[in-house]
Length: 382
View 1 (tube, rainbow, N blue to C red):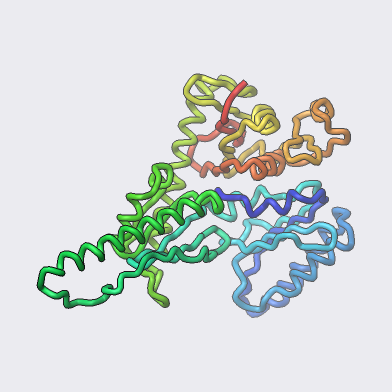
View 2: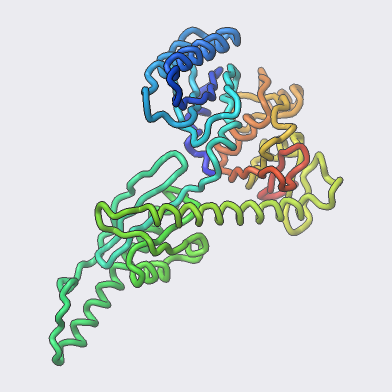
């Protein structure tokens, strides 16, 4: 799961108001229900001792919610006199949540925002490519890769004489140069945007030529889709379906791989419940004490959270640094935190994961994950 959009929440000290609400209004008394909901949010923040400026910022934002076209739900995060992040949700939260806490309560987003990975899409033809970045919260144009246009493109009658071979050779050379340019631009933009998946769509010959020029680490996460076109106004419904299928398959495979590494690194069931281990194949940490220790040491490569993790709300102690986290207050002071504060374990671990650009994966219901619902695959072990 891509969580880089949460970084602005961890650049400020807080405390934070975190609000998860349903925003659909399909009934005749929708406006009345909205008013009651807003009053409820304000009352709960005031009861939690939120400051007046933060309460006002949240209420002002909710008061300007559009009368129609609202998403199924929203998540707001505010501190001081500012709503720092206002996110539409693809599904309404199962229950309204309003909290006032040291850290923003971001854990519900892991489930509510879904597992859609960041995806770089290249719409390719012989003259170049349009590039687009798709994330769970929207799409962004990344500009174009402009190739070398051959003046004969589009001519259907080629002279049947000794110049025909020369003509066709020039067209092929031009196409190869364009594929080189597109591939080079994709390689240049890859680390800047950090996508999980590349989709090549458009003309079949050209997209295959581009694929063949990509380095192996990008080829490994690249797929071709035959339903896209570069022409302005072209329908994207079929392409959208193909991309959704590719994203779902990519996420499922990454989760299965991560869980297998976790299980091998953990050892036999019942072993290594409170410490990280290295079996020679992989490393794993299971349970809040082990994962907190690994997060503080920057060991976590993939954070695993069960959809209904029983230990997610366990209290831990944190400091101002993104990796200032410990299970015991004394442990936090021992690592240099002068005034430790309490926080939920899942929020503290997600703060550390976002700052370290760790992968975060949700273990769905029915799939066996870590004990207590929280585990990690490690980059290295002690």
